[in-house]
Each structure stands twice: as C-alpha cells, then as structure tokens.
Image (cartoon, rainbow, N blue to C red; front, top):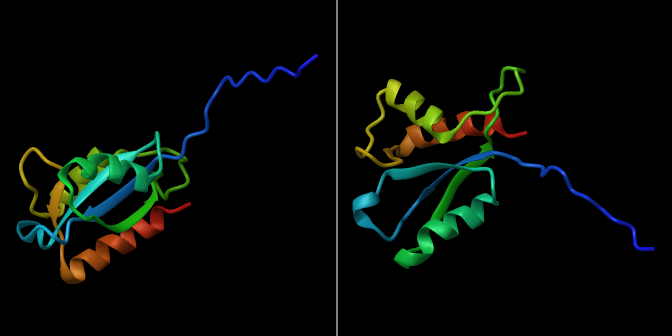
Length: 116
C-alpha cells in the first residue's frame, strides 16, 4: 500500500525587499519596497515587472520579522509608514520611495538586520 502524505500546513517565509528600475530615468533615486509570503522575492519582482519589459535591480531583501525577539512579522505597509515617519519622499498611492546615495545604504543596513 502506498504511503499517504497529508500536508496540513505550508511553511512561509515573509520577505521584505526593494528594487529599482535603472532603465527608467524618472525613477533614478527611487526604489519600490514590497513584501511577499507566497513566492521568492525574485519571482515576485518578475511577476510585477515582466509586463512592462524593463530591467529591475534588486537593491536588498530580508526576512520581514521584527528584530526584537517577539517573533512577529511586519508587512511592507508597516515599513512604508516607518519611512514616511522618517520623512522619506513617497510617490502618492504607490510603494515607490525616493531613497538614494548614503540614505540607500542606511536603509539597506536596516533591512540586513531583519534577515534571519
């Protein structure tokens, strides 16, 4: 008799990420900050960008878990609110933030701390 394997739950790894679109001049200095818990970051970016036929550059990615020992996850909207509170410019109604130069490096360091 064949062994039956019933999978009652699925392991997820919520991720936060940022990417840029270097070919789009109006996006110079801007990054899109997103979240995924259903697929890899690379697959999620490809899903978003393939229809616009433009190259993307992954700026950073990390686990979307607070680094306070609480084992709680956060979403991109939480990170968006944090960046807005810090005064970062945002294109209204989007997930695009103006983050360039030294600031981009600093934000990258924040995200690195969230990696598991």
